[in-house]
Length: 252
Image (cartoon, rainbow, N blue to C red):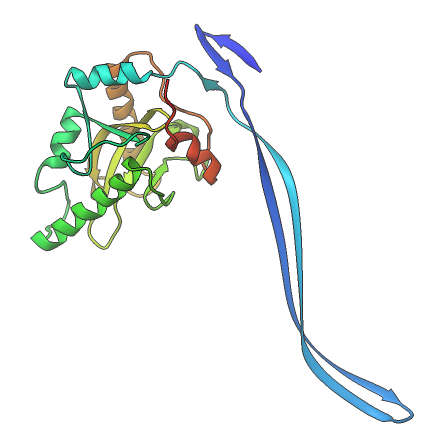
């Protein structure tokens, strides 16, 4: 189904997902049997397993086709406003690798030492902190698996908070202070980072500082790409198939 809004083609997408229900029962029983020949008793365990499969239609919110093309993104890189990050500057880029672009200011902050922190860190902990985040980003770039929720996530997807739609973060993990690389997917397999901060810069999960960061990212996007859209569908992102829609690179 398609409609036209503001000159952009809007399409309604639909996903058919498989729902699996498993019921496992473990029970203990004992019995006594009486007859003319006497009485017998016994006891034991019994196990039962019930598996039910069903197909579920999942309607997605409208998806805009007004996404950036690869040449449009690369034009911003050629101008110096974006930097393509690689795990090592000497790495040879392979076909099909995902792209991680950073605003020039974000790339400078990512390369600087020390990283933003609200607590003093020893050189050893600071090194571990950098290695943890670089490992996550390296897996993204080279097409390896990522743990949704631990390595990256779309803010607001878990609670279906629409004001965060399309806004993502890559995450480093404890014990050292966590870091966050925020941004948007310009197209499948092309992430544009708009800010980089320590977790200590934010309050609790419902603190307004998170939405303020999203608004800052939105402005950075508009300054860079104007009215061009970032990816906002499928949403919310909760299953592997929905995550793959953002990660799996598509060429023009």
